[in-house]
Image (cartoon, rainbow, N blue to C red; front, side, top):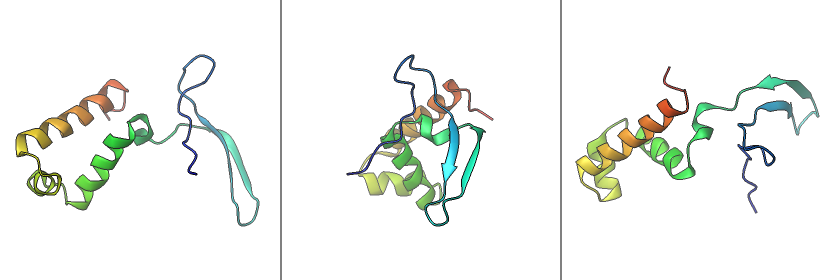
Length: 92
């Protein structure tokens, strides 16, 4: 069973940050306060879309063929992902 990384606080719904990391190999712990990667703010479907987009070398034409969708539909999906990233304050 794969555990899903929690992104929101169960108490207040605020965005969580990483406080420590542990190496399973040597048991080293790194502590601090770190932001989660930008893409974790997206839904899994959007993350998978981005992965496939990169594998397709950024070609919406290839993505449309792979997903059996029209080019404008795939363009709209990408535009939606871009908008979500900007809404989350990650437009840099």
